[in-house]
Structures are given as structure tokens and as C-alpha cells.
Amino acid sequence: MGERKGTNLYYPPDYDPRVGGLNKFLGTHALRERARKLHMGILIVRFEMPYNIWCDGCGNHVGMGVRYNAEKKKIGMYYSTPLYQFRMKCHLCDNHFEIKTDPANLDYVIVSGAKRQENRWDPKENEQVVPETKEVSCRLYDDAMYKLEHGIEDKKIAKSKDSSLENAIALNNATWKDDYSSNCALRSAFRTRKNELQKKQSLDQVLLKKSGLNIDLVNEHEDDIRLAKLLMHKRDTKKNGHNPLKRLITIVRSRDKLKHSSHSVLSNNTKNQTDQTHKLPKLTQQEPSSSKTTTNTLSISLVTYDSSDTDNDS
Image 1: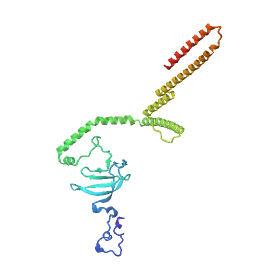
Image 2: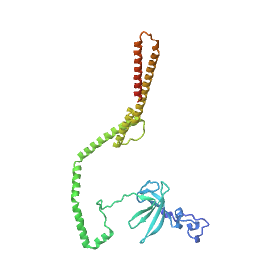
Image 3: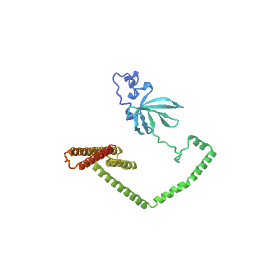
Image 4: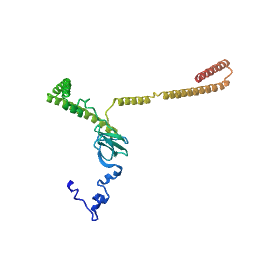
């Protein structure tokens, strides 16, 4: 369709070629809405996220490759290379983040509004094959002695890695030389693990059906077991009445009951003795010694009851 761009343009009857092109005649820009801030040096472009980031506004993760309508503007120069900055709005909140180019390190740098998810590493630490820099490549091409020294250094490094490489090859041969036995062992371990998972899943389903819950059960943890035992111990303690405060209240109440019952018994006995004393004068005069003895006995018994009452009060 590119060849039709210059032929499928409608020119109105009042078009004057002396004004210029069709866009100039209509007072519009070829980029339409993308150029609405062009007078401020800003162009609307489609920007693709170069790496994973975290938004500072909502805290959500924005993956590499997500595209935005970004405001592009020139902020400086790195030698003869222009530096551009892109400003865009997060699609999950109202936060804006800005990213600029870094031609010195062939990368993009976050200016504000977000932070980068660190997935970078040094290939030398992982013992990867690192391409030579431009300066080293030029020196290898021009300096024969440096090239020889560089080759000797590479041979030393390769020789130091021979033992680890041989160990890796031996381990690989020992593991996969008999592929049938290795496959049988893997399948047996897979079946055992599968049976364990199915058994656990069936137990979980029974528990969910019994409790009437519709949730996903997570694996049991040691902290959960200790917490459950502690709760069961507290429940048993409450059931058996080992609460110190409740024990104290029970003792006080039982003591009050005992004291009240002892007072009632004493009052009843005293009343009975009083009734008997009022009946004494009605006795005949023929037995004075016996009446005197009875009076003494009653007085002694009254003293005894008074002393018991005093002891109870104490």
C-alpha cells in the first residue's frame, strides 16, 4: 500500500498549488494528533518498555514489551548522538514515569516514576564467553605480540577448566549412559509423588466437604501445628476450670456458704436451748438437785456454743 500514498489524496476544487502542499493548504500536520505538541518540541510516539519495571504510583509490575503513547523530546547530546527522554502514563494508575536513552552504555535509564527490576548480571561471573571490546579487537589486529600473549592466556584458562569439564562429562555419562534404567527410576519417583499428591488431595476434599468451605487448602506448616496445640491446651484449661481468678471466686463463695450454714445451725440450737430453759420452772420441787444439775449443763452447753461461734467468726 506504500505506492498509493501519493495517488489516493483528495484535492478539493478550491485547492491552490501556490499555497504549498495539501497539509499546508488544509492547515494540518502530516502526523495529525501526534504533532499537537510539536511547537513545544514534543512528539507523540509509540514507546515499548525495554525491561521490567515496578511502578512507584501503584506498585504494580510492568513487563518488558508493554507499549505506551509516550511524549518524546530531545534533552541533549552525547557527542554527535542526540539524547531523548520519553514520558508516559501508567496504564494501571495516574502515575507518570520518564525514561531517557543512554548511548554511552547502550541502555535506557529511568529518570522518575518507576524503578527497574534487576535482572542484570556480569557474564564474567557466570563464566560466559564475553565478546572482546572494540579496543581489544583493534589491538589484536594490529599488535602481533599482544595477540600471542592473549592466546597464551586463553590456553591457561582453558587448561584450568579441564578438571571441572571432565567431572561434568563423567557425571553425565554415569547418569544417562543406561537411559532405560534412568527412565524407569524417574517414572517410579513420579508415580510415588503422584500417589502422595492424590492421597493428600482426597483428604483435603473430605475436610472441605465436612466443613462446607470453598477454599484452596495450603500445605501444613510447623508453626500452624504449634499454634493449634496451644489453642487446644487453652481450651482444655478453660474447660477444667484451672483459671486462677475463677478458683479464687469459687473458694470465697464456698467459704461464705459454710459460714452462713454454721450461723443458721447455731441460731437454731440457741433457740432450742432457750425454749428448754423457759420450761424449767414448771418442774416439780421434789427434785431440786436434778434441776440444778440440768441448769449447770445448759449453761455449759451455751458457753460451748458461744465459743464455737467465736471460732467460726475468726
